[in-house]
Image 1 (cartoon, rainbow, N blue to C red):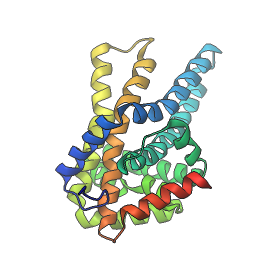
Image 2 (cartoon, rainbow, N blue to C red):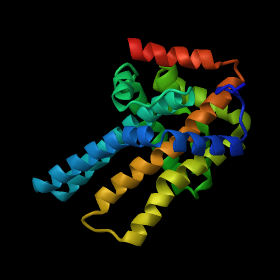
Image 3 (spheres, rainbow, N blue to C red):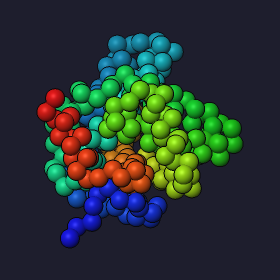
Image 4 (cartoon, rainbow, N blue to C red):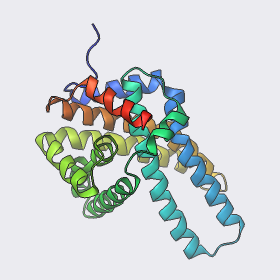
Length: 242
């Protein structure tokens, strides 16, 4: 008999399961992540091509990057959840489901938590790791529970403070896979005209692995509340039929 998807997992089990799901659903997960990365790359190329001034260009790209990152994480929440219950990951279906999520709530929650975590990293790194661990479930909560930004952030803190070490460990894994590994590749390859393309490829390939671990952490935390596979299935089914 197969083990339930929604169950309490250790840090090692979460990371191991993330790699397994990533291998089994590689194509679908990467394609889901590739959509916002492709939009960002295309927009970046067009803006540079029209000769936009440096400072306004940088601001526009920063804002668009924030929006596309939020879209990618939300879509990957649905994609990883779909993969975990044993269903194929279809790109069109995932983005169709995303229409029924609280987009603005998700965007505000992502922006607020990103700013707070970034500030924490500036303050000697450790505060950033702690805040990142506490806020790590914010986007999955907004997407799957359809809450407001404040409620999602508060709920993430409540769930993660129970086992902060696990939360910080998974957040560190996420940063390692989705930020540090691409940065190392960029440094090795050097920064040049093809850097945006390389960044898009690496982001599309690695972000699904990192965020599958986040979703597994969320489901592990929800297991302690009595949340079940059937309830997860119902949430995903509802988002597809609305």
